[in-house]
Image (cartoon, rainbow, N blue to C red; front, side, top):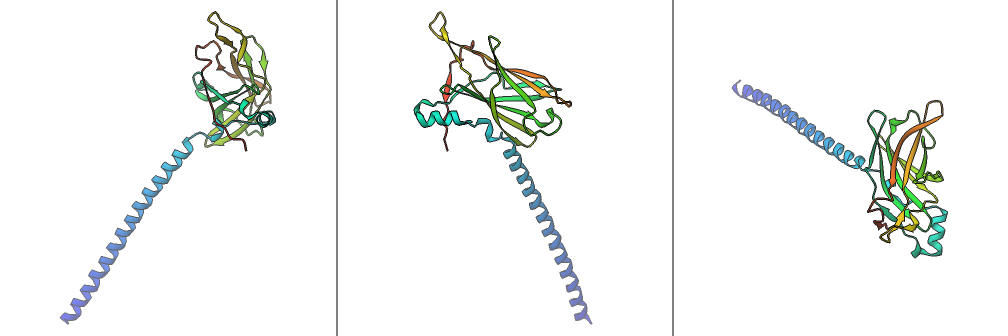
Length: 222
């Protein structure tokens, strides 16, 4: 009888040990799963926190490609500095502007517009804005084309304005060539299909002392 009791107790101890091991393993797997989930979420946030590549893209149309084909060395993409990158609109929502490029040989001015998708209600096949550049003399330039993209809650517009010349045929008293200035005016579509002014942004200030400072951007024609 004593041997039977000893063996029976040993089985009980083994069952309790197996249950304990299973419980520990489950806790370990839960811990590992939580850590992996946190790492995935952090990686996702890091990736989505970056702007879409379209914001720094060099837009190329037929005029650009034709100029490059005829005389590649004449095509230069010059990046200029911009004013404060953000403009506040509609209850603190922001519109961001970045990557200002000018291509002298084609007289094209390119920059990016980033905005929260909920600035405008509804979905649109095209952009929900009308854009125009106005120079220091009040001349309006509204010949433009664009490329769009989205990432998370943001929308992106990479826009290229045509017939934009930065330099004037005038010089100041110091012999420095004078430059034009351009203000971007944005109208936003309304629920009835009409447009109302949303904001203004000085894209390029030709009176700034550093208005002639730029760096050449490398680009690849495919």
